[in-house]
Image (cartoon, rainbow, N blue to C red):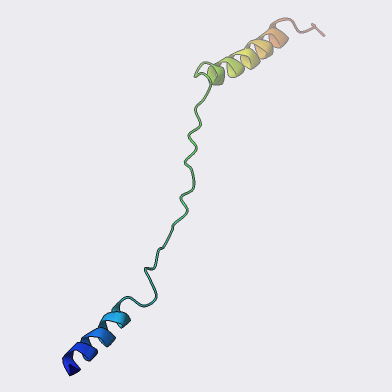
Length: 61
């Protein structure tokens, strides 16, 4: 009888409190891609052409 009371007391302590659930919030990963690779080359070429035109078409003073 004493053993049954001791087991029932220890059994209730084992389930006290419930489970501890830890939820980690994961931030979404954002991947950005360039629209095109030629856009990075096109702008310096246009600037270079404008500079060459300004030098070649400049006024003679």
